[in-house]
Length: 462
Ligand code: AMP
Ligand code: ZN
Image (tube, rainbow, N blue to C red):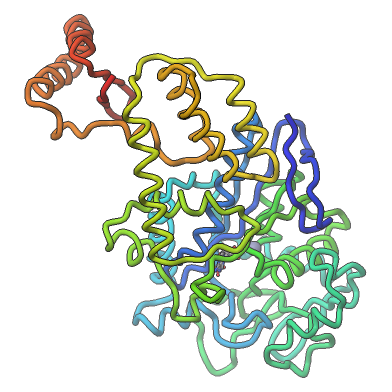
């Protein structure tokens, strides 16, 4: 079955075609690790996770690369202001490397809470400086760069289709870039490839380069690392919509100028998470909510947030409020209780329902429609076993841990069941397989099903 995806480059929903058969190269712009990720950032990572899961569900072999911006992202997108990392370090009295490590770990923990599958390759800007310098050298040789007193810049007037992603008249792009005017720039849309360290200060993060000591501009890392880790498999590149006009536009310009080849065939962008009144949730706005503050501290399972994000199409703005989260919590709990009420043993995935589900999600990731298919399936006259088998199949895309939700915590088992369960655990530990099989049958006769995996043995009602 075909997958159609909305491509910002062509502004149409297109049938997805890979460069190399069943392989997909996927690059998602990662976090700038000078602070916690907020729920808005994480909405974008949930959308990208669902995209990846949908591709895998359709039989593609996905290689997913995500960068960690741990240097060089200045406080304004026009290459002025302070380095966000060094600023974060000052704020917290740590050094920039410690800040980067701390917030990278915090980000990975957020991904885990939201059941977002980690990328196959994590790559840090600071560990790929050589590759960025090499790319800038190519651009210099081809005549796309010029030097100013504070850095090496890309001359956007030399790249013919600079606005091919944004589709904006150049005038408008210039307006957008006008944050703080740098008089030495030839065109207002020009951007830094390499910034020099200031003469009078020693930066915590700086490297030698053919142009002088300094650090890379923000955009160059994504070009260098996506080409390094994905080779020619430049299929899909994603981020939030705020990346369209500057970051992704600049990535395309410098990459295509350097290689003379198209850089990524599909560009997908997620809409914002806003707070009430339509204001974007942003790190700089003080309106920003984290997994810890908004969910864990309120005793809310982070998967409730995932559930609410799944119910809004990724290209539509989503509004955040406590009410929306409370409603999602009710919806998610109701779904789990509906599943818990079904009797369970081996079932078969229903192809008919699977087709309906696939039709929904393959239509530019219409996950809300996919959830509607799931609820219709639960109302259908399919057997309980087949319903559950099919729902668990859908959950490969939804990532709501629906199977796990049916597990019973051992401490909540009736005492007589708990005793048999623990005897069986002991028998398995002693590799006494005959006894463990017989105890499993005993539990089954008592209405409980056990499931063994490498990590753990789980138990649930039959
Ligand atoms: P950053 O750490 O600022 O580079 O952002 C990480 C990702 O979050 C990028 O893909 C951004 O486009 C995205 N993003 C930033 N703010 C929001 C928001 N309010 N809603 C959705 N995505 C966002
Ligand atoms: Zn990027």
